Image (cartoon, rainbow, N blue to C red):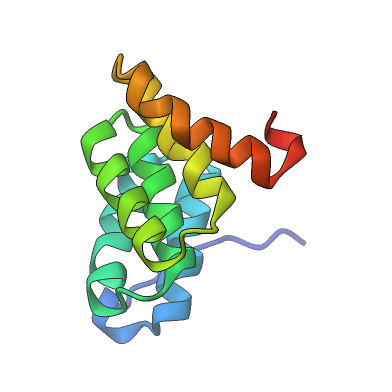
Length: 119
């Protein structure tokens, strides 16, 4: 017997933040990056210290070519956690995509120094 998945009839206000995050993650995993970002924006606004949601938002922006927004979110992550090596890596790559290699270089070096896997 096959089961059919139906759309969740609840509004975002009816869902918990965890449910919304999971929903955004599903959109991200299916490469619907703009939809994931749309779901994550209010979550990050409501919980600015929640770095997992902010990182997923930054990644969603990056993959949907919203590079200025991605860079802003990554800078905010780094302001809260300067040792977040993946944020340094992503910020470096985001800046590179914008043709800002000189600005990217220190972030890429830091990421490599923090984690040999990024080198």
